[in-house]
Length: 72
Image (tube, rainbow, N blue to C red; front, side, top):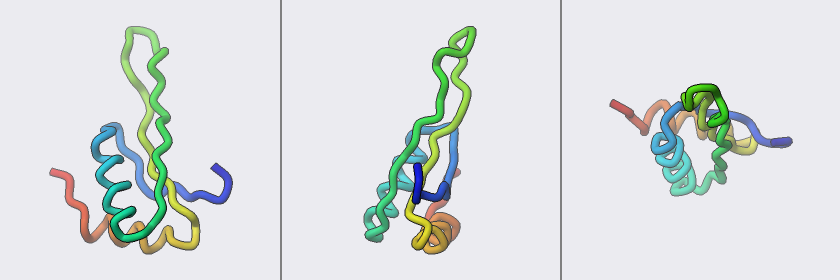
């Protein structure tokens, strides 16, 4: 993920998708990297879904996440 900066991480895929969609609505290109490992013994999934943006918009993206997105 050269030239991308991680701005959000969660164990819940739908939260990552919401963050990505809101950023895209604000014309900030975002991608999700699935870091979940399904090969773990016992079928327990470990890892996170991570949202990445270009470094030059990372600060704006973080502000949107902090101020406009609320997960209950």
